[in-house]
Length: 420
Image 1: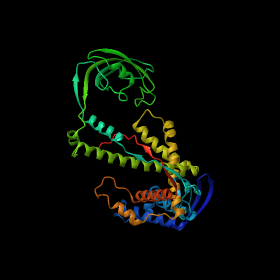
Image 2: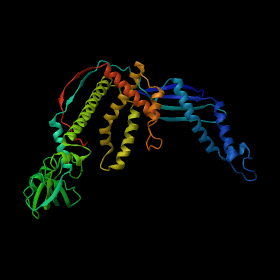
Image 3: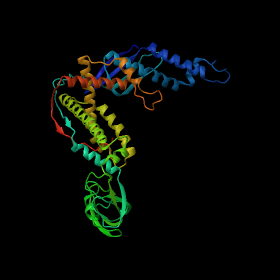
Image 4: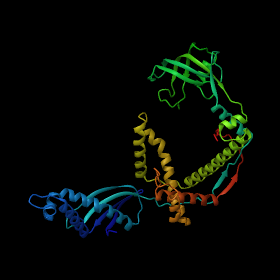
């Protein structure tokens, strides 16, 4: 490692500014090696390739050589300075006041934020509640019914529309309160006439209509509507009913079970659905315990997050999101993602510190074992560092749960429908 002199000149929060001095011998060595590389590759009139003098190369390529020397020395000197000062940097450093000349020491200043030095507390003896769930027939039947619905067929009918039907309508906008809905006509809009599937105003207005009939329906959209033109808006539509289709559900019997998949009978299907629900319930239980662990440990260690790290992270998120959604603003993105970034940083930090204090580590053989499970031609293969971090986090999590006070709280499950 390069030998340098490093002195901290300013401390502000987690930011450190330090001056780095590189010996003149290292500077001259870098200039000589870089100049020689240019000399060998350069072509000069009257000289065969590689036969020009170093003086000629230094004169012609002065600016290029200087830039190459900077790019060679600064990263090495920066790493050496961090090592000498015993600092762990976070985020990108800011370079300032660079002095570089042949025959002289190279001097420059670096500003960088460092890993916080916090004595992590409150991570032993956590009070955790393990919410366990019992799967009953009352959970399985709705799952079977959802599978039946997915296998349902539709028959077009001429009677008035009823609850449970599927209607196809054309909508003509008459007005919208905010005058911001760009389209005036919406054709072949499919409405599932069931509570929770169609807007209440459409459900109430379309049920009872006959094909060819028109009606004015006013719809009040909620603030969280996905379409920003409709969110929080009130729109009056002229609605024409074009078709009505009746939903035909297959019977819940052995034949249905065989069509769904490789199930011998309806009882076999119910058993498989129940097992899947139990797996999902167990996964949900452990995920909830994980949230409790994370939240309690982070709350016990409310240290300030390095501002430079936070700004750099939010700038990256803002750039990516604005490329895909022009309706967002940088201010809204920062307000949404800053709390998550702060919590994630604190959690990552306490995991590292707990592992250090408790002697928890990851062996290289463990990393290699995980890497070996990925096919060589896999499009995305995790880095060894990523695997190491994940294994360390899992070990710390297991340690925290093992030292916690865990009480069980049986609950009734209201699962989302599961497809076997």
